[in-house]
Length: 136
Image (cartoon, rainbow, N blue to C red; front, side, top):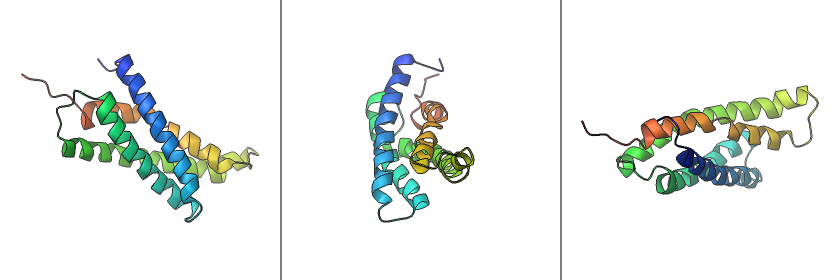
């Protein structure tokens, strides 16, 4: 089964908490480093939060070792951080200003950038990072 509604809902909640950590920490880091760098640092904080919550509450039946799950999680999130960074920078610096949105363009772009990889990340983590080995 591709989607277990309870599992997907728990994934959304864990991801939502991680997204809040990501978003707030980007603003925090932005006080000391540039915008682009702050996106990456914030993503790493959000990723650690997501890994801990996802392993503990979403994919509880995983048979993968902690190291194996962490490696899979990291690989999936390398793709997701590229999505997040590209979308955020594009929207903040080109897309939103092009349609006349100047005020809070960085915040809006970052919020959209965080939301985009939700489905691809869920599927990647379900079938790779935290997969359940079946006998047979």
